[in-house]
Amino acid sequence: MSRQEILSWTSLGVSVSVLVYYLLIVFGWPESVPDYSAQFTKVFFNVFWIAIIVEFIVDINDSIQKKKVSADERDLTIEARGHKNAYSFVVVAIVFILSQMVLSRFLGDGQTLYSFIGSETMVFHMLVITLLISSATKRATMLWYYFKGV
Image (cartoon, rainbow, N blue to C red; front, side):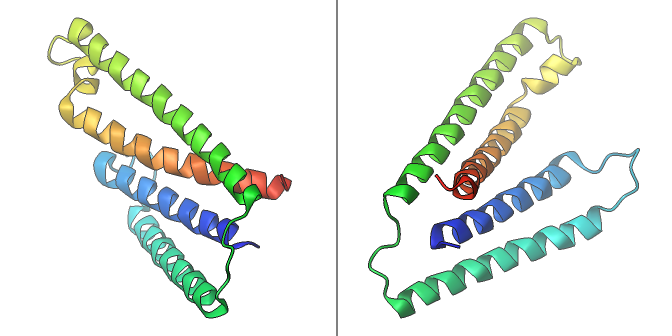
C-alpha cells in the first residue's frame, strides 16, 4: 500500500468519524432507536486517535527512509479526480443550500419547516456537514481509483 493510499484511508476515517460525531452532537440520537450514542462516541474518538497515530508513523517512516518521491503522476491524477468529485459535491450542496434559503423567505411564515431550514444556525450546520462530506468524497474517490489500479 502506498503512502498516499494509507493517508487516504486515515483521512477518510477521520472525516467520517468527525461527521458522525458532529451529527450526534448537533441533531442528537433518534428517539425510536435504542441509545448507543455513548458507545459510538467512544468508537469515533478511537478511530480519530488511531488515524492520527498512523499518519504520524507514516511521516516518521518516510523521514527515516528519506524517500525522494512521495507522489508520482498516478498519485497526482488520482488526487485530481478526488478534487473534481469533491468540488462537484460542494457546488451542488451550496446551490441546494442557497435555494433552500430563497425558498424559506417565500414559504416560511415563522414556524414551518422552511423557516427552520433557512435559519442561520441551520445553514451553518449544513455548510459544516457539506465540508466534511466533501472531504470524505475526495478520499473515497481516491481510494476507489487506487483499488481499481488506475
